[in-house]
Length: 307
Image (cartoon, rainbow, N blue to C red; front, side):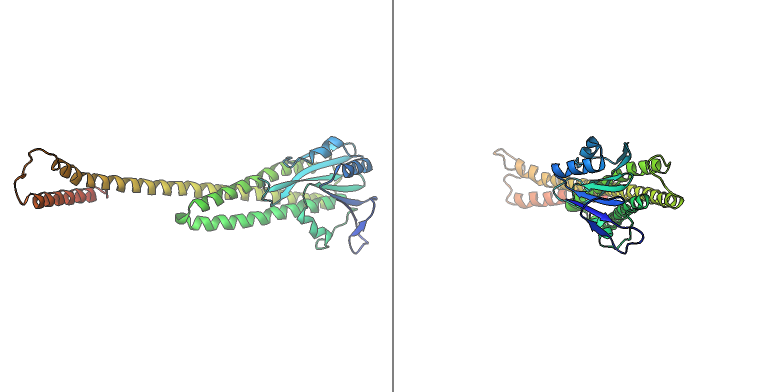
């Protein structure tokens, strides 16, 4: 799917065009071979770099080829079919256009298309910063949800079971994906501020610096939540290990206690002469002896904290 959008400072709403023009924003989603050929020829794009954008696990980076600069980044993506929580997005900034290419729909772009966030496609640098800003806010929203979920599990640490541990592992996986997306993105954002890849005005530089600060804060926050998850997991492992040790100790103690009457009963069950063998009160005497020995053993274990 290919869509062309256009809006200047004088326009009141975003226009949908049938064909590209100067200052256009072209958004491409899951293109087929014919659509790829069309945008490559129309905008003079680098075929090898465009093909890299079709790799779902492509890492964030920046490249320049000809008059266009290619920005690979990732955005929050929820799909149970994929074992990953972010999806790739390619942003191409040329001399007279901005092109975005994604394999899946980018829900964040609905804010632009529906007019909830004002954009001017003719202002390439400002529009590029707005795209990166909306992606950063999406990561921030995801991180807020994860932080609250982890905090709830941390409060109920003594009630954590297998289901909660599995949930924490999934949280950790998501956070690692967020960090892996933001860190390299922030690196090429720093390179971008040098002015070698895109013309930035003073106001654009200030917005870019704010964007990098937000990204750095998100990375620090994500790592902090990761540390919390690791602490919760370590504490849970310690609690489960202590519970297991206590259970094994009790079972061992009960085994020893039950072994005493078992040994005595086994001795008197042999077909040989035994003490009290002819005494009519032998059963009661042996029973009382067993009870006394068991009680003494229990008292001893209680005093030594083995029971």
